[in-house]
Image (tube, rainbow, N blue to C red; front, side):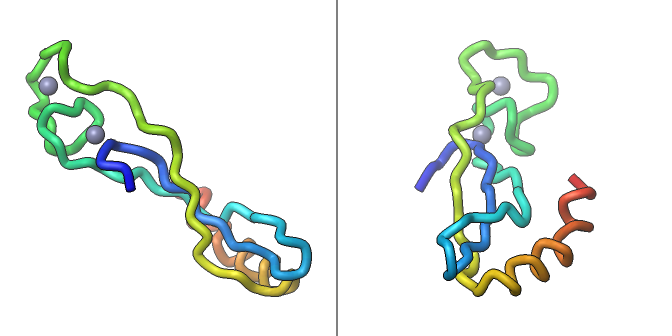
Length: 84
Ligand SMILES: [Zn+2]
Ligand SMILES: [Zn+2]
C-alpha cells in the first residue's frame, strides 16, 4: 500500500481468458502538506524538497466476471472515462 500520490487503475478481469480491461482510473491523494501534488499542499509553497512526482500506478481488480459482462461494464463506464 502506497502512501504517496498515485493513479489507481481499476480493471475488471474476464474469468474466461484472464484478460484485464480498464474501467476507470482515479488519482489517489496522499494528503501530505509536503507533496506538491496533494490538495493539502499549501499553494504558495515553493520548497524544492516537497515531492513532485507520482508513485507508479496501482492496479486494482474490482470484479472478476464472464466476458459478456466485461463488455457491459465497459460500455457503462464509458461516461466515467470521458469525464477524466
Ligand atoms: Zn502526494
Ligand atoms: Zn511545498
